[in-house]
Amino acid sequence: MFGYGLVRYSELVRGTLPAVLDKTSDPIATPLDSSNRRLLDLVRPRDWRTSNYEDYDLVVIGGGTAGLVTSIGAAGLGARVLLLEKRLLGGDCLNVGCVPSKSLLRSARVVREVREALAGGRSVSDAVLDFATAMQRMREVRADIAQNDSAERLATAGVHVLFGTARFVDRKHICIQEKRIRFHRAVIATGGRPVTPSIPGLRDAGYLTNESIFSLTELPPRLLVIGAGSIGCELAQVFSIFGSKVTVADLAGRPLAQEDPDAAAIMQRRLSQDGVHFELGVQIKKIHRSGSEAVASWSRGAEHGEIKTNEILVATGRAPNIEDLGLVAAGVDSDSHGVLVNEELQTTNSRIYAAGDVALRWKFTHAADASARLLLQNAFFFGRRRVSRLVIPWCTYTIPEVAHVGTTYKEALEQGASIITIPFKDIDRAVIDGDTDGFVRVSHQKGRMMGCTIVGDHAGDLIAHAATVLRMKGTVSDLAGAIMPYPTRSEALRKVGDSYRRTLLTPRRKRWLSRYFEARRWF
Image (cartoon, rainbow, N blue to C red; front, side, top):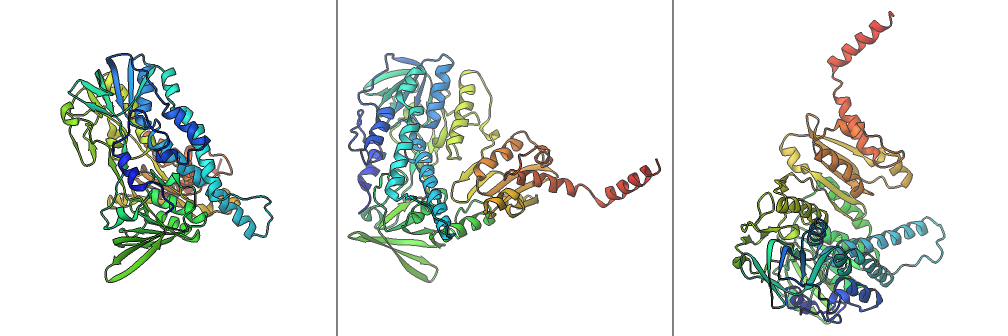
């Protein structure tokens, strides 16, 4: 098998790590090369001890994005802050999420561009980037960025850090490393973990998730990806570009089922061009392994088939990390989706708040960051900021990217909204780049902007402008009012505004203007 300690890894994630981590046993640190040693020295220093107090203004459980932003923000305001982390600082984003996946996508893009250059008859000297090289670069990038989330940086900012398993013992106290600590306010920011589907034979066959796939050192000849969401599609494209024979299977009839169907279709077509095979609308009935090969049996109505693979990547959703936190003792209600919070991110215990993946429906790093900032105002300064008022964009970083903010395309149609679409083939920069696949699509009601979908190169950057207009409760005309640099893809947003303004020129207004200009000719 190409995987590393797969069943053992799922046990580690669910809560059996010691207070002092054995660096040789953590799958994230595999292989234990210089880059991963540097990573662990930053985000899980051995024998780190900084807590000198038995009471704090704020205790934060979880050292991912939400926990880091909350801790540093509160410490910067002068609060006495303790951050408790069970595993590695930086959370999913740094260690097994955004940073490693986007690093690999960057490498895959380079490979793609080199191949296109060679296909065009051009010579590219010494342009070799194989899977092992890309993985090494990913580990180096991750270690470089880890400095921002390091225990040393937190200490410098005035945050006390303890590693280990934390548990509420009552409504005002928490226990870690047999130490009882009192808090005035507490924040639960423990994030989530991958959901494992109940497919017969999956556990025995062994599988990867986003929490273990970045530890691979060899490229699997064949890869089955179960789940056609953002994570599944991004990694499917990466592995296919590097040479794996990749199949994506999903019960839904199309990838990115929550996105604009036209945007998802463009993304699927481009992944197919990169060699990814899709089996959609299928239910995987069972999986069995024989040696290095696993076989997944599937059905689609009366149709049946098999997928032969060497490795299996499960990308079917997330579950909150709320087990063993002592939530009942703390008086904090929860359900299968996570910790229950009100609009101000306050739990059923008025002293305790929650932020990030463990409490939000948006499972994004930037949403965790935004919720932490909102929480700080509400917890310490009698703020009344409401989480429902946040405008949260998101992006799938495949090639091409698919980004969205606001009302979805389906919701817009159901509400009778008007739709404006500008294809990138009408944008000079896209023509110059030779990549005209994609579009900008905006929904509105009488000019009031409702939502925006962008599919194409740099969609994740472009969506920020649409998100700003939405946040300011702006109109589609506001898109036309912005001056965009030429030539850039951002011109597509301005053209959306121009298109809307042209609809305001009704036949009646045209007749009035004709009379106006005719009258001026007499002067």
